[in-house]
Image (cartoon, rainbow, N blue to C red; front, side):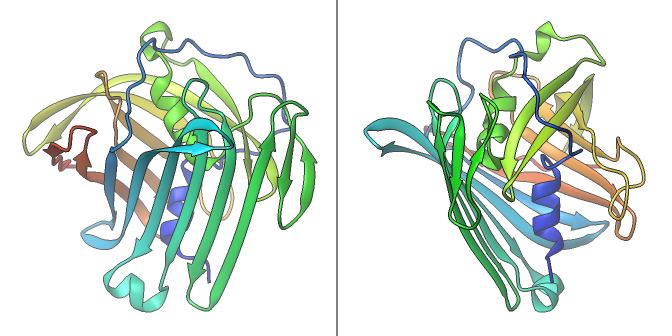
Amino acid sequence: MKGLITLLLVSVFSVIYVDAQEIITPPMKKDIPFFAGETLTYQVRYGILAGGTTTILLTDEVYNKNKVFHAKAIAQSTGIANIIYGVKDCYESWFDKVTTLPFKQVRDIREGSYTLHNEVTYDRSNNTVNSKLSGKHSVPDNIFDLCSVFYFIRRVDFSKLKEGDVVFVNMFFGDEIFLAQLRYLGKETLRCKNGKTRCIKISPLVEVGRMFKNQDDLTIWYTDDNKCLPVLVRMDIRIAGAVHLKLIKHVNSSDSLIVQRINL
């Protein structure tokens, strides 16, 4: 059975399926808002119940003589959810430090008795990807994977966008091409135990069907500062109701610890 934690992680960016198209690059920040050594830890909650955690780590590595970032996202169930689902999934990406475009991605799924492992490499000169499970695919230029698009969004200069503007991003996931559509909803202040946090609000358009009732049933809040940290994800799901991923721990590259808990 596919664990809900993985559905939540993937749903953040695996949104409406649209034929791939040429993407106009949105305005980007001059300074990169993340560095090697950053660790983000999220808690998955269904109302008052905690169902799991997702941890995203960023390190420096060398891939085919290129200095790259290596991102690893680990989702695992806890408590009752762990007894029912037994989820421990890992998504990895090796991506360029300047363009944020990936060279390689790995998906390792362990959910109860179900397992899946796949590796995908990117040939940028020929606009193709090679999947160990499904072979070679032609893809559009400037295509991302699940982890690299997470960091690409943090580099978008939302101060130059108007409320209602949409950022389009091509992605390769599950051996398919997706066009993620991310609508900018302006700014909003969230109340935290340590005070208030000014945030940028984004709504990835999702596919209406088994999981979501409306296209805007998924919202992400990023801190409106030089780090642009995704601090909260809210999903309104047909069966589970409101589900949240909250940033509960942030370790930055200088090893100082920041703990943020969002009061909903």
